[in-house]
Image (cartoon, rainbow, N blue to C red; front, top):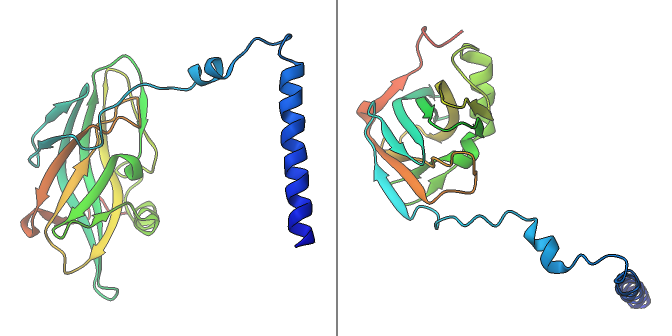
Length: 202
């Protein structure tokens, strides 16, 4: 009890000292709280997923100055562990004058039929780095050149090997990683799953 009271006393004393210092420096520094808050990026964005776009494998979708194509869903099945590693083969064209960075955790997720959301898993990324050719697989984060195109395999995710239908979701955030108002969704079935082959594996 004594320790708690002593800690509380010092916290209160520190707070009073900080307030006193602020008052003492008021005539020397006219910076207000409002000025400080103005330096924070307050760019407004739409609510997450408020605009849904249905995409199709192999067909380009344009949103937020981004032309995105989900070319295929690549998988590695670990039968012993009863797991399936999921990767995305994508094309992404940036039509702005600014290069920006995307990453799997922020820009992609998988939605299961029961509504569960699955996010990227580091184990799948470790597998990819060790087994997929270096010029084919790109680790997070990956850069999208200005007025240019990014093409390659990214990810991944881990699902139970019995799950063969789900929805792939992509946020075309562009240069603002918080701009998730638009989500592009792809309905995936077992026929869409493609096992990694010798053209991609080391």
